[in-house]
Every structure is written in C-alpha cells, then in structure tokens.
Image (cartoon, rainbow, N blue to C red; front, top):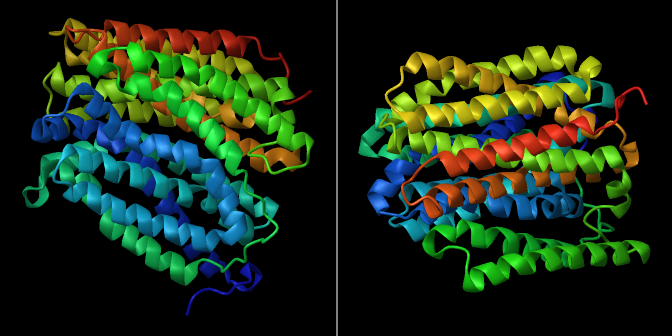
Length: 467
C-alpha cells in the first residue's frame, strides 16, 4: 500500500527509499537540459532543421520550465506536493516518449515544450517532500547530496548523450536520449506512488496568476525574437517585440508591487529585491547561467559540425570538463567558499571566461592537437564549479529565513531564464549573425557575459557571511 500520510510514521528505510525516488526525478529533470546538446546535429540531419530549430529543441524545454517553476511550487502547496510530483513525473515520462517517437521537427519541439512544463511541475515538489521527510538538521546532509548529484547530472548529459547515440540501440540513434526516460520515469512514478508520504493541500494558498502571466509575457517578448533571429534577423515585428519586452517587464514589476501593497497574492515578496546581496546575486546567476549554458550548447554542437567529431567522441571530450567541475565544486569551492567569499566567484568567472573562449578558439582555428584542448576544458570545468557551487549559499546568506522559499524559487527561475537567454544570444550570434558559421561572435558574447559577472561579483560586500 502507498506510504503513510504522516512522514513521522515512516521508518528510516522508507525515508531512504523515498529519498532515492526523489534523486531519480532530480537526475531525469536535470540531465534532460544538457543531454540533447550532443544529439542536436543528428536531429538536424534527420529533420533538416535550421539553426533556429536547433535552438528551439533546447530552449523549448528550458523556457516553459523557467516560466512555470514558481507557479508550480504554489500549486504544490495548494493541491499537495505528492500529487503534483506524480503528475509531473507522469507527464515528463509521456512527453519524453513523445520526443523519442516524433515524426517531424515541429512535433519534437511541441513534445519538448510539454516535457519542460512537466519538469517544472515535478522539480519544486522534490524540495517540498524533503522538508516533509526530514528535520532541519537532517536536511543539511540530504540537500548536500542533492547539490553534488545535481551538478554531476548537468555535466553528465552530453557524455551520456554521446554514448547512447554511438550505441545506436535498435537502430534508434538520437531517439534513445529521450526514450531512455520512459522506463526510468515509470520506475520513478511507481516508486513515488508507493513510497512518498501523502500530503494534504492547503486550500488557503493563493496563486498569483496575474504575476505569472505578466512576467511570462515579458520574458517571452525578450527571448522569442532572439531564438528566431537565425530566420530573419532582428527586424520588423521581431525587433518591435524585443523592444516591447522591457516595458512589459517593468509593468509586471509595478503590478506585483501594487498587489503586495494591497496584501494580494504575489509570485515573490518585492522587498527581496531591496536586499543588495540578493539583488546583485540574481544578476550574477543570470549572467553565469547564460554564459555557461550557451557555451555547453555551442561547444557540443561545434565539436561535431565544425571539428567533425562523432557524438561518441564528443561525449568523451566532455569528460575533463566534468572532472574539473567536480574539483571546482566539491574540493576548491567547498574548502574556500567561506573564507574567500565573493573572490571565489570572481576567480571562477575569470577562469571559465578564459578557458571557455580558448576551447571555442581551438575549434575555430582547427588542426591543433587534442592535448591542448583537454587541459583547457579541465580548467574551464574548475572555473564552472567554483562559480556555481558557492554561488547560491552566498546569494541567500542575508535573506531572512521567512523568505527562504520565495528566494530559492527566484534563484531557480533566474538560473533557467539565464539558460534560455544564453541559448538565444549565443545561438543567434552563431546561426544568425555569422554567415560563415564563425565561433568568434558567440565566443565574444560568452566572454562579455562572464567578464561582466566577475566585475559585478567584485562589487559585492567584502564580508557577507560574517556581516
């Protein structure tokens, strides 16, 4: 029979099994953001898609995920986190199968959008169930595992994608990167039904639909034209829509402040933005996520299309980057984050900027020995780990505990929106602005984003944790 409605009645073994179920869902959701990068050239070869099509295969997942993330957290409060988790896992599994069986490019993008929306329903419930299962002290160790596994999952995507495509199981090629989610998702769904504690929804929970629609419309207006830039450039209706995004975003912010002043439902309390460390921190996350996601998207694509490596070889080449991330996050970041504070971000951004652009330059120049690329990727991974691991604890260091949930929701949403922006900007520079398919404009954007992040991090207070 399904788990008890009271987590206190669960044995340690039952809690561990429930936690493992949440880990499965976490890996499914995170891996799917990056696993498709390695498969993009193969997908394009079958469907004959444009550069904009390639961008939408990636952004079609991340965009609805980002837009629905905060709303789905509130829906979990309203209807119960277990219920939303099961709906999310079921939808994610079905959409993954839809991706793997897609008969055309349009159907694939539609399935990716549904997959991202289902992932957004699933993700916030994972942390909510953790809160139900464990005491505050017990959560520290469990959330540390989530950080490590989440980081490894994001960098494992391109490697796993390369292996699956090379294996060509049943002659399915790139489709296996999606179809593998079917059996894994089914296991997570059954385990979630059986093992997760039942949770009652809170009927008093209020949903900020106006805020969701307002911010969603503004962000779509800002990002959609960039994702379409490869087709016709930024002109006419696309340019007008992009320009309209700024006043739409400002209007959504004013509306949120008015609703907060009246005591209405809001996506997040506006006073959070008055917190300087948090305000600067989310800008840092936006810049970092845009640069890092844009780099990983373009690097995996260019290795195959420009340097002519196979998907399997592309996956192998990503391994030094993965090792570097583990070193930067699990060793350097963990040991120095508290003492170095903002300077670990400054160094991490700088190292990633230098080595990511050098990696793209290696592809651009061509004919250089692989022995030059691999240590460069290792150093880029160290920079990525140093930038991402300590960032969230530092950004949330001065946030009041009462606002921790809302602040975490903003952090996750900004990270995803940065990812979409990175795909849009870097992809537009490569597919739309550089007819010769040169990597130079895209590399310049990545370098500028990370340089701006390093400069912004340097302006944080000298002492954050001890203040």
